[in-house]
Length: 302
Image 1 (cartoon, rainbow, N blue to C red):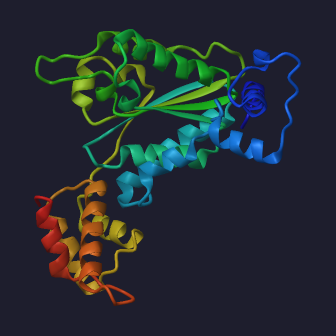
Image 2 (image 1 turned 120 degrees about the vertical axis):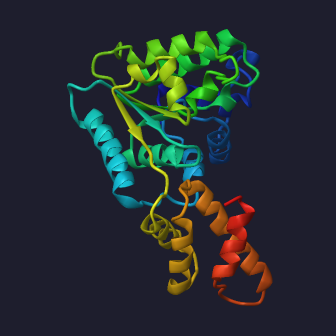
């Protein structure tokens, strides 16, 4: 979605090559389609869902496994739909928590893209690097202000403990950022008819609980690890890992001995796939053997 402000910025860029219209007296720009094509690549709309960047968080796909994961996914999608369809729910917040690598950000990003919300914003720790504490709060506030201008918005707070600069030794954290989040997450949408869904993500639920952060979220959902052989099998099949069924059965039985995040399993699968391909460069198809997969598995400290 490109709004009026975006169009003004676009026209200014096209017509003046980055200079203002006041740069020359009686200046009349001569525009061509090539100018607009160039400007569209340079000017990023303030509104809209950055699907390209969000898709980076689930580039290997979002693979369902087990009833626990399906329940979390279904609940999140139900909350997204409620905010979208229910006029009496202008504000909703949900906290996804779980072990590192369990796929929390991938789940949130995939559901956000599928939701077709006109505005989705992801706030991550990398956005705050190099900013003073006040500037960090200002950046977060600006994102919420953008959301209030859209009829329907979603904000994803990725790795909240990193946003807070939380360190277990001490413990130490940014109280200013914490207070900003506590206020903004619960703050009623100030414009009548506008709706906002806030999705928080943390791998340090107990630590965030001590700071009182989970209490400001309406719903908390735990994203599970892969635990049962059937969980591992569902991901391997979903990711189209080329391994014979009998060999895969042996692999998942071994994997079922220890819980694992879906992210780690996908990395191990890619390593096994690449090493097999390197050994059979001229082959049109490469089948991963049980031993090859196990070798890669133990390289990841299984």
